[in-house]
Length: 331
Length: 263
Image (tube, rainbow over all chains, first blue to last red; front, side, top):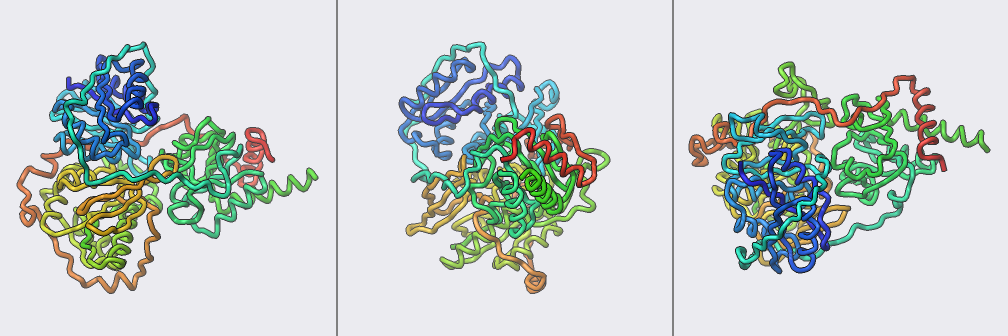
């Protein structure tokens, strides 16, 4: 069995949650596996991250290099190529850094590549082909596929954040192996300049108990008013999914998801939202999720508590007038 | 600036409910509405805007079949100078690496300063752009949300990272960038525009034109193969309210009040 490596994302000395999910994924490939964590970075932050991994990983390879203080995928790739054995299976979290790093890494390792994996079956399922049987999704989660990945020359696999339950203990008392001297000087055709922090926006959607959240189903900019009116009546705020921001119908500060805001409301009204995982990743704290969508097959219905198959452009205005009616009676 | 944009024709998820075929080995494709992959359309618009500022040409290419010419023509109607179909029996069954290998051969036949792809196809893995860059030994950036052309064969780009933040970098040309949706507002293409390019020839490049040997791409070379399709079950599934609209409105209101409270 090839050795399994997990590339660990960390920031300011804190490892990303995905570190423990990758360990779980490695165990699913081979229950006897002792996956190796591999980290790049610089100085005290890197050492702190390494220390946090000992609870789960028995072996931790660190590459300390001033050029790697900020994770530039091209530099990280060059560093990894110096130390990774051929035929390795390399697991990487499928987030903005993994998307940058993993496809090119697979080419340079001459390894197979499968992205955004949700589940793994062991090699016993695919014994004839020396491979991995992987599960991924297509068409925004409307269908799933089994994918057979030939691992004879190694594999790079990106793992969807949140898809695997994080592995916890028993404490592996991991030892840190310093691989820095094998790397040497690094240069890249892309150079990091700065990070621009997101603008706050007019409404802070993270502070509301009830969110009326709209997706592609709102259809056009003028219809956004329908959601704003409902939110006003409910004392709620309007948030949205990515297509609404892409179309410039709402500000980026209203977007819920992995590339937008993380929200923790008590009630989340998903209106005309299909339920792509990048969107669901921004909804935390298990709110009561009510989905309204005219497509009965929308993936959102699989994760919602209550679903209504209806056109939001007709349903929401009726809901608004009902709320107003109720309020006028209460007065 | 000479720009190549790699595009794909895909089933349009905003127009279709995706269902499985009877055998369960593919989606039901008979009645599907196809269109240009959304992120690829943003990539073409971005290329057109760059060329409008700096001069140059935009070439749009796809690896596929004759059916895919319609998306090339659509992008030509948007303003792309040239459409190219890369097509050969030997290409069928290629995995992401195979597609990237085919595109590499095509890129090497031209003189492109910049190669763009969409960040991800509806049925894809956000992989071909990064692979193509590695095969060409060009710098690469994914999830790109703005491009500014600098002096000295460089670009200033921003990438979308977590929490709505942006990572700003400088990148040398030639390079490959994968474009995120929302980077611009793609221009409208009407039927008239498409008719105007209906007669423009679209050259086709096959394996021999590109010097791609037998077995280098296609099904035999694929390390990754899709085995089947199935309908996922994520959670326990929602309780679907089957009442009249009025009843459903009442129920939703009751639930919102109970679970979250009305302010």
